[in-house]
Length: 195
Image (cartoon, rainbow, N blue to C red; front, side, top):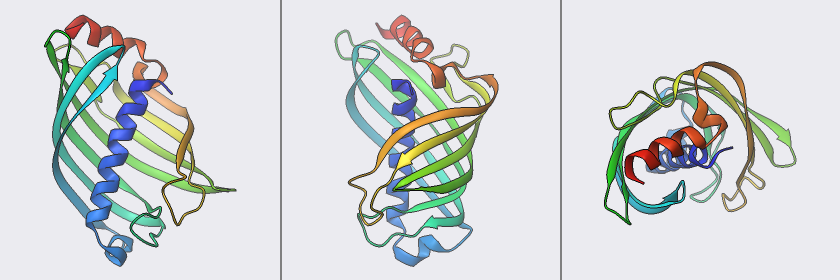
């Protein structure tokens, strides 16, 4: 999976996990619970060969329909299926020249399934719709609907320490989702804007 797609999914995963931790124990296991969080963050990273400072903010909202893996403690795996909206923006600043561009995102996700494949491996399938990535005022880099299956290694469910991302496949793609397949479209746009 391309680096930016991983970056996007890691950021989404962190938001999901932090939101779930706000729900203590059994409350997160009940169906049709709504989690809503306004968030902001800042960090330094390397994207497309550029050292960048990232500042972001947005609104995360999830409706839990089904608990698949019930948490056994604060550092254990916890997984549910539902619907997620995560809309916001990031300011990406090249630390070498102070040029900035705003990246807007609209993650509209309908989680479809989480299947235990055995030996610690799980298959997670979700549909992602909307104009997912836009840099500045240019046309969206990603737009439409894509259904993705990811293979995850969760290992021992009593700890998140052994979790890892194995890979992903697009099952259905209606629209333009070049960022899922390659870093090149995003990197070209980012370098043109702040390189």
